[in-house]
Length: 99
Length: 419
Image (cartoon, rainbow over all chains, first blue to last red; front, side, top):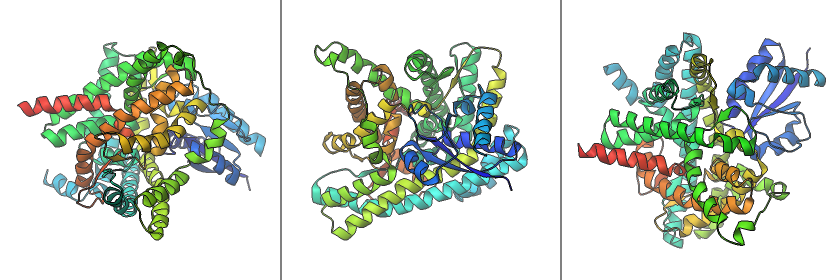
């Protein structure tokens, strides 16, 4: 059986932009037959959630400008549509390296 | 027509699935996807209502005791912007207002009056809420649409004007921020910063966030804010210790659960927001535009996060002493972070200045939140939120950061009432 990944999508309140990013991410994972649990959270809760879940990847909708100790990508391309293919590729790359 | 009247009387949980399905079909989503989106939004809405009932039960007695036992006349309870967004999207005139906002952006782009292509459909709710207040106060749909249009024009122009400023500090290319709350709060930042530049000694002070953020990290957690503030309020209100414990947990429960419910509503809105965004983007793909975004993409800046956390206690103190303020900031305390973005950009991350700007903005925010509370309460009751009749009212504290668009609403309402 293929590995199941865990991914955190984070934004200011875990409501709006993280949901948009998670929706694009789900589509990408489905296309590539990758199984993953996606958790949405807010920046205030992010570090606690990373400690508990130990995710394979964190997608944020802003630049947090600090090291979270896990692979972290900025998901703004999923909001604007500019550079989406590049972000797709980077996400798959991170997940592959974790396989 | 009679069908729609009956539908509306059943409340948003039943009405939203039908209306959103129709709205989705309009954007060629396909029946299956549109229907799923509609039902999801209905579920999110029901969830929000359940949590609000709980929230109210936990906090209303304490707010009352605060007034009776401690002399704080803070009878307007802050249910938070997530609840306000549900009021806005749950209204039966929401799809019409959302369409009007899309059309305004479309026209502004065609006429070359803006470079901002606003794909941040979700945040239309802030503008729509103003239209709904006008509609509630005057009964005029035309005035409601005019209000929404004027406010959207304001947002787009401010987005253009602050684009370079935001890029210079936050370094996110190709975007601008037509977010109504951000831009209105930002209007206060410019004059204050100008003033601070001209006061000797003060204009030399520059604090950087440094390690403050790490130290305050845990304080910003909604769960912790709920526990601490719930307990503190009950103690100040001279409640017995059982009530102190119940209020602390009650507020923590609401602060954690409410955003989760609203995010379900958002999940339903995503396919429609994406379809509307794509519709707009396709038509303007041949020219240079700035993609209009939520200020959420800038929140992560350390200076911004630190300013916002430090402003949480400041907000409570200002609310207690500010004359004319009846708002008790609660659910929106973690959302101060959206209010401070422009101030941080203007001062290039100078904590000292962004705190002064933030504290000033808070006064305008608290007054506006208080002023809009009767209408927010009425609109929330209209769509069936579990808010018992009584003296207490609700508001969304951080939504008060649109003091300027709220004034536009006030003027248009007054003019409409003349006729």
